[in-house]
Length: 382
Image (tube, rainbow, N blue to C red; front, side, top):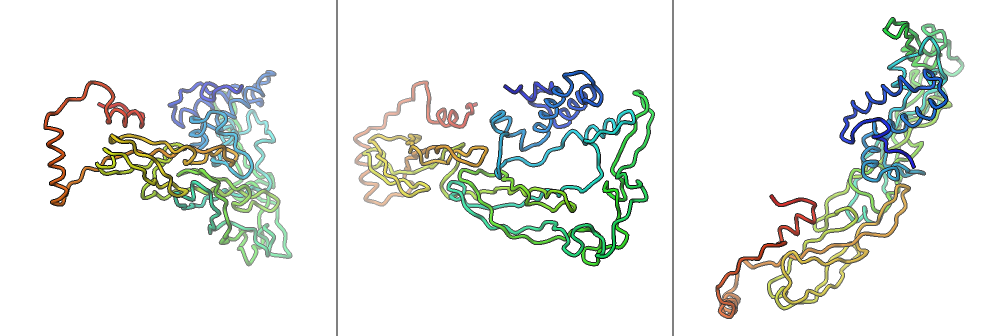
């Protein structure tokens, strides 16, 4: 089984992003295969890098904290994560081209992949339960059709970058306590491509891309919750010619319902009944997301009594976008004591009061209504 990521990096679960980055830097200095030639270096560095990729990303870390390794196993088009910073950026920040050597993982020359995009999707409470197809409109960078994405006017060609001489990066030597450190950064003129536009395309003005409005349908699976992000691979900005597109992340926003609330995979409903129904009992219809369901109120029902409607809650959403079963709907009863009475109602209550008397009885020490409410929400009364 995979080790706990916090244990791998040697940080507590409360560690900040800076603490996590610092811990990974320290381990990277020691165990990157370019630096450490021991047989176990490659395996150990892969483990450190995997832990850093998850814990440095807010969405992935939240899912890992809640579900462990199972929470970050998304596949296909559904994923609750965003992009994450890999090792390359940190290694360049630390070493550049260590000792004058350059590895293939740090080559910047060549077409750059597209950037990710994000779109907000607003849905109703019911749509979050059953799933829905939503049409969204957003803008993304598309390759210019005039120059096919290279930025050069048709009939002209790209030329070698004069600043980096076509290498795609510039290197600087710096004396440190570790010796001479040679840092390599993407060329600021050609942005690491090694080539520049001499005659810009008249359509995109040399950018190679154009900002384009896009309208598409996004399938929202059943059981999504507020703040979840759905990843649609390859639906982000276009990369340079020959490079892959970025991804699109659909951020889900669920509108509050007038009556229903959600707790994990259960739906919570507070329901008021009158004192006669509470005292005598009744058969009533309770609203659910699928229509009314009958329940029987037994005589003597008190405020705080709960009824559980099995399988009437939220579908349990897996990390791959499928569902497995549903939660329940929990109905909490509130006995509604009237504040205004007709003359006839007052007369009847006065007659009833005479049969009860006016003696009061303190409740014996134990679980009262407030205690039960605090237990449900995981708190403790002060």
